[in-house]
Image 1: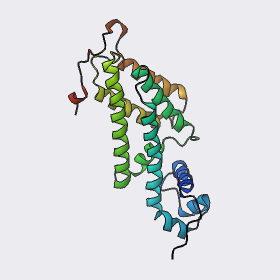
Image 2: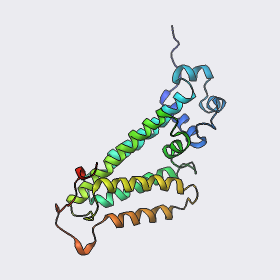
Image 3: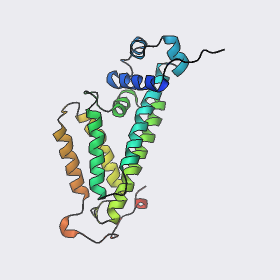
Image 4: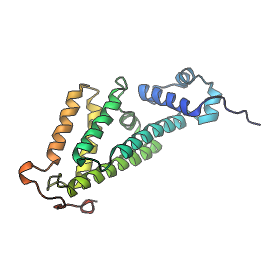
Length: 212
């Protein structure tokens, strides 16, 4: 009969997530996990599998939290563009608070892709969810007359997604928050409808179906 576990699996996953986030996959040895998690090798293997399986679960936990933040923060309250700008700023600020570790997702993509298919699947799922969430918000901006006529919601979402991913890399070189803020402000200035061409809500030349 298997012995019942005497530890909080969710808390252990959080600690593993922070360790992998701080050190990366390859630089994290099993001895590091044993020391950080306070579990023996046998207990780690029994509960989570090998190091790679534990890493995938830890990364999935991080990505699930990002998804929940998007799902709860992006709503139909207030101007759509300013709402989206605020959420992206919060996402960047949350990763900036990690003590210089950057974004766990971007770090993992840079370290392990294209050779790690499990991490690739997690990354693709997360990025697609983010793109869809951004697109929905920009569609609302278009309906409300906020979005520039030359911008389709889907392409605008891809622009923002790629910008945020790139900013996560650039912040390792220049961590000053002002740089990220200025880049976001510039992007949203391009996405927004110029004041002298403001139109009534519903005057939308593009739809989400216009871009595959």
